Length: 446
Image (tube, rainbow, N blue to C red; front, side):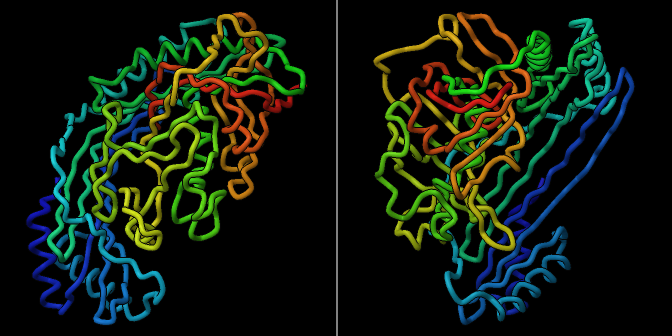
């Protein structure tokens, strides 16, 4: 665990020796162990300790230089500060970053949630047992080609020459199972499940096993669907992945760079059905790895993005907030340049709908469980997407797996065409979200 008080003292002394007056440092380290198995035998065992430290130095002309290192001993810090100081002579003269105005703001109730890491042999034995149970769940399941059980300790800190000092430590464990079937005269079918929690003892391994088995078995009975317009129900994971693929809508840096579907004047405009509300909340009670501050030391918080269909907020760094006369939101990432990214989503129904829907009674709706090829099938600047998916055709509660189909559309039309946001949210690794019903989406099937 990083001793940030000692580190801050060392940096202050080194900076004084070098004549550096203004600086800040963001660092993180990850201690990770992970295992994979194949038919009862260890396939891959990894252990790593990765660290990264980003150092910024401002010179007398208020230009900033930046460098990164993995060395946090005094000699490494001295070299990083010296290099960043030299680089400041070549710093950009427009939109120069500065300290976050909230970097020294008190953060109350920072919880350090740590769990002792289990032995590698324990991870292997547990995963071998899970793999066997999944293979025994159905005769058609012949392999679990992708699987993994991992545990990580995450250590983050931020400090600056104004006296800011942040530090947090978390533990997280995750399990992933992806099984494959083979049947005579039929295509191989696959499905998976992923679970995450604070530590191995708290991890819902049985739930992951059950979900992977049920999904895989449900895809054995498959058929093609006709191309056309369908009422579509997005699973929580599918809706969040689609929403996140178009996060430029509420990313202030993207807006300022003209790389967004929004403009600086978009706040207050209607962009979705009035049934939908979306918040970004790193401190949500269901987030097992809450972040209390971002790469600039800004405290994280609950940020409204869409409220009852209206775009009400952008995600900001200190720099974008200053340029847009707003407040930083705690979403900055420190690197060669400051970037912005979402954290933990909270999607919920903005109001009680006048009409409700149920998969038990719905006729010919498509339930999308998982979207694929998001890296290739999304044009974030145009708003369009065309994505393969795993899912089912639902008819009065009967589920038939959809064979080789894609869904296409425009994210703006999708958000406007939401007809129902279910009341009960589901916790996923990316956030809390219910199933979301959307009318008239294009499905390309047979």
